[in-house]
Picture 1: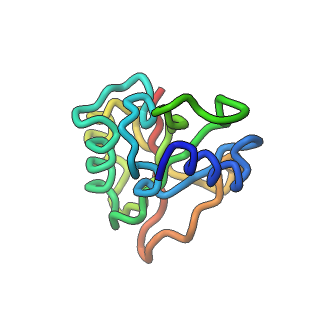
Picture 2 (picture 1 turned 60 degrees about the vertical axis):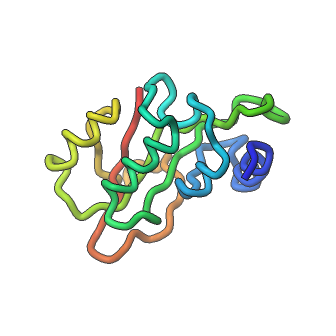
Picture 3 (picture 1 turned 180 degrees about the vertical axis):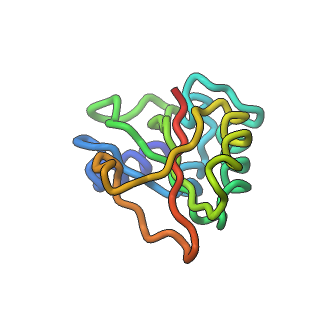
Length: 139
C-alpha cells in the first residue's frame, strides 16, 4: 500500500477529524518512513523492525493496531512520507507489569489498560478471546 492509498483509507475512516486505528500490517506495507511509527524514537530496522517487536508482544500477530493522529497535510503527503503513528494497541493476556520492560525497551512509555472511560480511543475489533487491548505510547 502506498502512502497515498493509506491516506485515502484513513481519511475514509475519519482521520481528518479524529484519531483512527488501522491494522499494523496494513500500515507497514511499503512503509520505510523512519518517522511514521514511534516518531522521534529510531528503532533498529525502522518501522518494519518495530512492527516485528510489537507482533512478538501480542497474543496474536494480527491483533496489533497503530493509531494515527489527525493527518498533518490537507491533501497529498510528500513523496515517501507516511502519516505518523505515536501509539499502538495490542491484544495481550499478559499482566501489565510483565509487559513494562519489553515495552519501555521499545522507547515507549509504560503500557496502559484501555478502559471505556478513554472515549477518545478509536474503535477496534473485539480482541481475541481471553485477551484485552493494551495501549503503547511514544512521547
